[in-house]
Image (tube, rainbow, N blue to C red; front, side):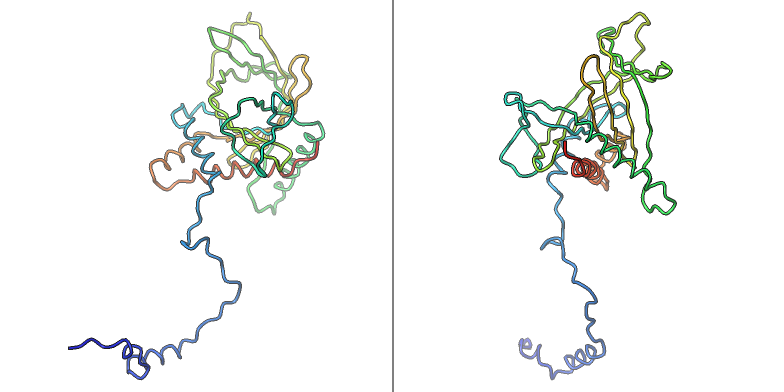
Length: 292
Protein backbone atom coordinates (compact mmCIF):
# COMPACT_ATOMS: atom_id res chain seq x y z
CA UNK A 1 0.00 0.00 0.00
CA UNK A 2 1.34 3.40 -0.94
CA UNK A 3 1.33 6.31 1.50
CA UNK A 4 -1.05 9.19 0.78
CA UNK A 5 0.55 12.16 -0.89
CA UNK A 6 0.93 15.51 0.79
CA UNK A 7 -1.62 16.88 -1.63
CA UNK A 8 -4.24 14.36 -0.55
CA UNK A 9 -3.57 15.11 3.10
CA UNK A 10 -4.29 18.78 2.48
CA UNK A 11 -7.24 18.19 0.15
CA UNK A 12 -10.20 20.16 1.50
CA UNK A 13 -12.61 17.83 -0.31
CA UNK A 14 -11.72 14.84 1.86
CA UNK A 15 -14.28 13.89 4.49
CA UNK A 16 -11.87 14.40 7.37
CA UNK A 17 -10.96 17.85 6.12
CA UNK A 18 -14.61 18.79 5.67
CA UNK A 19 -15.35 17.73 9.22
CA UNK A 20 -12.51 19.82 10.53
CA UNK A 21 -13.69 22.77 8.52
CA UNK A 22 -17.21 22.46 9.89
CA UNK A 23 -15.82 22.27 13.43
CA UNK A 24 -13.74 25.38 12.83
CA UNK A 25 -16.80 27.21 11.53
CA UNK A 26 -18.64 26.34 14.71
CA UNK A 27 -15.80 27.82 16.83
CA UNK A 28 -15.05 31.33 15.51
CA UNK A 29 -11.60 32.61 16.41
CA UNK A 30 -11.58 34.99 19.37
CA UNK A 31 -10.04 38.38 18.75
CA UNK A 32 -7.62 39.74 21.38
CA UNK A 33 -9.26 42.32 23.62
CA UNK A 34 -6.06 44.17 24.52
CA UNK A 35 -2.40 44.55 23.62
CA UNK A 36 -0.67 41.28 22.88
CA UNK A 37 1.68 40.56 25.82
CA UNK A 38 5.37 40.47 24.97
CA UNK A 39 7.16 37.29 25.91
CA UNK A 40 10.43 37.92 27.80
CA UNK A 41 12.60 36.33 25.09
CA UNK A 42 12.52 33.94 22.15
CA UNK A 43 12.93 31.20 24.76
CA UNK A 44 10.04 32.63 26.81
CA UNK A 45 12.43 32.93 29.76
CA UNK A 46 13.69 36.06 31.49
CA UNK A 47 17.43 35.79 32.25
CA UNK A 48 18.65 36.40 35.77
CA UNK A 49 19.99 39.93 36.11
CA UNK A 50 23.78 39.65 36.16
CA UNK A 51 24.28 42.49 38.64
CA UNK A 52 21.88 40.92 41.14
CA UNK A 53 23.46 37.50 40.69
CA UNK A 54 26.94 38.93 41.18
CA UNK A 55 25.99 40.58 44.47
CA UNK A 56 24.14 37.45 45.60
CA UNK A 57 27.09 35.19 44.80
CA UNK A 58 29.48 37.60 46.50
CA UNK A 59 27.40 37.69 49.70
CA UNK A 60 27.21 33.90 49.78
CA UNK A 61 30.94 33.51 49.11
CA UNK A 62 31.85 35.60 52.17
CA UNK A 63 28.94 34.87 54.52
CA UNK A 64 27.92 31.30 53.71
CA UNK A 65 30.56 29.66 55.91
CA UNK A 66 30.28 32.08 58.84
CA UNK A 67 28.17 31.74 61.96
CA UNK A 68 24.86 32.96 60.57
CA UNK A 69 23.66 34.13 63.99
CA UNK A 70 26.29 36.88 64.14
CA UNK A 71 26.47 37.89 60.46
CA UNK A 72 25.62 41.46 59.48
CA UNK A 73 24.88 42.31 55.83
CA UNK A 74 24.49 45.98 55.09
CA UNK A 75 25.00 48.70 52.50
CA UNK A 76 26.07 52.28 53.14
CA UNK A 77 25.72 55.18 50.76
CA UNK A 78 28.52 57.70 50.35
CA UNK A 79 31.29 58.60 47.91
CA UNK A 80 34.21 56.63 46.52
CA UNK A 81 37.11 59.06 46.71
CA UNK A 82 40.37 58.83 44.77
CA UNK A 83 43.00 59.23 47.48
CA UNK A 84 45.47 60.90 45.09
CA UNK A 85 43.05 63.27 43.37
CA UNK A 86 41.09 63.81 46.60
CA UNK A 87 37.86 63.86 44.64
CA UNK A 88 35.14 61.43 43.66
CA UNK A 89 36.42 58.58 41.55
CA UNK A 90 35.67 58.82 37.84
CA UNK A 91 35.70 55.94 35.36
CA UNK A 92 34.58 55.73 31.69
CA UNK A 93 31.27 54.09 32.63
CA UNK A 94 27.80 55.70 32.48
CA UNK A 95 25.94 53.67 35.12
CA UNK A 96 26.52 51.82 38.39
CA UNK A 97 29.50 49.48 38.24
CA UNK A 98 30.93 46.97 40.70
CA UNK A 99 34.64 47.63 41.21
CA UNK A 100 36.93 44.62 41.36
CA UNK A 101 40.00 46.76 42.06
CA UNK A 102 39.52 49.47 44.67
CA UNK A 103 43.16 50.24 45.36
CA UNK A 104 43.74 53.94 45.85
CA UNK A 105 40.12 54.50 46.85
CA UNK A 106 38.53 55.54 50.13
CA UNK A 107 34.83 55.17 50.86
CA UNK A 108 33.37 58.15 52.72
CA UNK A 109 30.05 57.36 54.36
CA UNK A 110 28.76 60.87 54.83
CA UNK A 111 26.33 63.46 53.45
CA UNK A 112 25.39 67.09 54.00
CA UNK A 113 22.99 68.28 56.69
CA UNK A 114 20.48 69.18 53.97
CA UNK A 115 20.65 65.71 52.43
CA UNK A 116 20.20 64.13 55.86
CA UNK A 117 17.13 66.29 56.49
CA UNK A 118 15.72 65.40 53.07
CA UNK A 119 16.04 61.66 53.78
CA UNK A 120 14.47 62.18 57.18
CA UNK A 121 11.44 63.91 55.65
CA UNK A 122 11.21 61.34 52.85
CA UNK A 123 11.31 58.32 55.16
CA UNK A 124 8.96 59.92 57.69
CA UNK A 125 6.45 60.33 54.87
CA UNK A 126 6.59 56.56 54.29
CA UNK A 127 5.82 55.97 57.96
CA UNK A 128 2.90 58.39 57.85
CA UNK A 129 1.51 56.90 54.63
CA UNK A 130 1.67 53.35 55.97
CA UNK A 131 -0.17 54.38 59.14
CA UNK A 132 -3.34 55.00 57.11
CA UNK A 133 -6.03 52.34 57.67
CA UNK A 134 -6.41 52.04 53.89
CA UNK A 135 -2.70 51.59 53.18
CA UNK A 136 -2.49 48.47 50.96
CA UNK A 137 1.18 47.61 51.51
CA UNK A 138 3.48 46.38 54.29
CA UNK A 139 3.82 48.90 57.14
CA UNK A 140 6.88 51.06 57.72
CA UNK A 141 7.83 51.49 61.39
CA UNK A 142 10.41 53.72 63.00
CA UNK A 143 12.39 53.93 66.21
CA UNK A 144 14.46 56.84 67.53
CA UNK A 145 17.45 56.01 69.72
CA UNK A 146 20.35 57.92 71.23
CA UNK A 147 23.33 55.80 72.21
CA UNK A 148 27.00 56.06 73.12
CA UNK A 149 29.59 53.62 71.82
CA UNK A 150 32.78 53.11 73.80
CA UNK A 151 35.62 51.07 72.29
CA UNK A 152 37.68 48.98 74.71
CA UNK A 153 40.66 46.66 74.26
CA UNK A 154 40.19 43.69 76.58
CA UNK A 155 41.97 40.32 76.51
CA UNK A 156 43.13 40.89 72.97
CA UNK A 157 39.69 41.82 71.71
CA UNK A 158 38.34 45.18 70.57
CA UNK A 159 34.91 45.48 72.15
CA UNK A 160 32.21 48.00 71.34
CA UNK A 161 30.24 48.81 74.47
CA UNK A 162 26.93 50.52 73.75
CA UNK A 163 24.98 52.36 76.43
CA UNK A 164 21.79 54.41 76.47
CA UNK A 165 22.68 58.08 76.24
CA UNK A 166 19.95 59.14 78.68
CA UNK A 167 20.14 56.45 81.36
CA UNK A 168 23.63 55.02 80.93
CA UNK A 169 22.14 51.52 80.87
CA UNK A 170 24.25 48.89 79.14
CA UNK A 171 22.59 47.85 75.88
CA UNK A 172 25.08 45.51 74.21
CA UNK A 173 28.72 44.50 73.98
CA UNK A 174 29.98 43.17 70.65
CA UNK A 175 33.21 42.49 68.83
CA UNK A 176 32.75 43.66 65.24
CA UNK A 177 34.88 42.11 62.52
CA UNK A 178 34.94 43.35 58.94
CA UNK A 179 34.85 40.41 56.55
CA UNK A 180 34.51 41.93 53.08
CA UNK A 181 33.40 45.05 51.19
CA UNK A 182 32.02 45.46 47.68
CA UNK A 183 32.30 48.99 46.27
CA UNK A 184 29.81 50.18 43.67
CA UNK A 185 30.49 53.32 41.64
CA UNK A 186 27.27 55.05 40.57
CA UNK A 187 28.27 57.97 38.34
CA UNK A 188 24.74 58.84 37.22
CA UNK A 189 23.68 59.46 40.84
CA UNK A 190 24.79 61.70 43.68
CA UNK A 191 26.06 58.80 45.78
CA UNK A 192 28.09 55.63 45.41
CA UNK A 193 27.55 52.71 47.74
CA UNK A 194 29.28 49.87 49.53
CA UNK A 195 27.92 46.44 50.47
CA UNK A 196 29.58 44.90 53.54
CA UNK A 197 29.63 41.55 55.26
CA UNK A 198 30.60 41.77 58.94
CA UNK A 199 30.25 39.74 62.08
CA UNK A 200 29.07 41.15 65.41
CA UNK A 201 29.94 38.61 68.10
CA UNK A 202 28.56 39.23 71.60
CA UNK A 203 31.32 39.74 74.14
CA UNK A 204 31.77 40.20 77.89
CA UNK A 205 31.55 43.62 79.43
CA UNK A 206 35.05 44.97 80.12
CA UNK A 207 36.08 45.66 83.74
CA UNK A 208 34.59 48.77 85.28
CA UNK A 209 38.06 50.32 85.44
CA UNK A 210 38.58 49.93 81.70
CA UNK A 211 38.90 53.22 79.84
CA UNK A 212 37.46 53.57 76.35
CA UNK A 213 40.05 54.31 73.68
CA UNK A 214 37.40 56.18 71.70
CA UNK A 215 33.76 57.13 72.13
CA UNK A 216 31.06 58.26 69.74
CA UNK A 217 27.51 59.49 70.14
CA UNK A 218 24.83 58.19 67.80
CA UNK A 219 21.49 59.88 67.22
CA UNK A 220 19.67 57.36 65.04
CA UNK A 221 16.26 56.94 63.47
CA UNK A 222 15.62 53.40 62.25
CA UNK A 223 12.94 52.63 59.67
CA UNK A 224 11.91 48.99 59.32
CA UNK A 225 10.06 47.51 56.36
CA UNK A 226 9.70 43.76 55.83
CA UNK A 227 13.22 42.31 55.41
CA UNK A 228 15.13 45.55 55.94
CA UNK A 229 16.06 48.28 58.35
CA UNK A 230 17.18 51.69 57.14
CA UNK A 231 19.26 53.64 59.65
CA UNK A 232 19.64 57.39 59.35
CA UNK A 233 22.29 58.41 61.88
CA UNK A 234 24.13 61.48 63.10
CA UNK A 235 27.50 60.45 64.55
CA UNK A 236 29.76 62.57 66.74
CA UNK A 237 33.24 61.24 67.54
CA UNK A 238 35.49 63.34 69.76
CA UNK A 239 36.56 66.54 68.05
CA UNK A 240 35.60 65.28 64.59
CA UNK A 241 32.87 67.05 62.57
CA UNK A 242 29.34 65.69 62.87
CA UNK A 243 28.82 62.87 60.38
CA UNK A 244 25.55 61.95 58.67
CA UNK A 245 25.15 58.33 57.59
CA UNK A 246 22.55 56.22 55.83
CA UNK A 247 22.65 52.43 55.67
CA UNK A 248 20.35 49.60 54.62
CA UNK A 249 20.64 46.35 56.55
CA UNK A 250 19.05 42.93 56.45
CA UNK A 251 17.08 42.68 59.68
CA UNK A 252 17.66 38.92 59.77
CA UNK A 253 20.79 37.84 57.88
CA UNK A 254 20.16 34.22 58.84
CA UNK A 255 16.85 34.23 56.95
CA UNK A 256 18.68 35.40 53.81
CA UNK A 257 21.41 32.79 54.17
CA UNK A 258 18.88 30.00 54.71
CA UNK A 259 17.51 30.86 51.28
CA UNK A 260 21.05 31.05 49.93
CA UNK A 261 21.70 27.52 51.16
CA UNK A 262 18.57 26.36 49.34
CA UNK A 263 19.84 27.91 46.13
CA UNK A 264 23.16 26.12 46.54
CA UNK A 265 21.20 22.88 46.96
CA UNK A 266 19.18 23.65 43.81
CA UNK A 267 15.81 23.62 45.58
CA UNK A 268 13.07 26.29 45.40
CA UNK A 269 14.17 29.45 47.19
CA UNK A 270 13.77 33.23 47.38
CA UNK A 271 17.43 34.15 47.72
CA UNK A 272 17.78 36.20 44.54
CA UNK A 273 14.43 37.86 45.18
CA UNK A 274 15.62 38.96 48.63
CA UNK A 275 18.90 40.30 47.26
CA UNK A 276 16.98 42.14 44.54
CA UNK A 277 14.82 43.84 47.19
CA UNK A 278 18.02 44.83 49.00
CA UNK A 279 19.35 46.48 45.85
CA UNK A 280 15.97 48.09 45.15
CA UNK A 281 16.06 49.87 48.50
CA UNK A 282 19.59 51.17 47.95
CA UNK A 283 18.80 52.41 44.45
CA UNK A 284 15.51 54.06 45.39
CA UNK A 285 17.17 55.95 48.24
CA UNK A 286 20.02 57.15 46.03
CA UNK A 287 17.71 58.16 43.21
CA UNK A 288 15.59 60.20 45.61
CA UNK A 289 18.52 61.95 47.28
CA UNK A 290 18.73 65.73 47.42
CA UNK A 291 21.52 67.76 45.92
CA UNK A 292 24.44 68.56 48.33
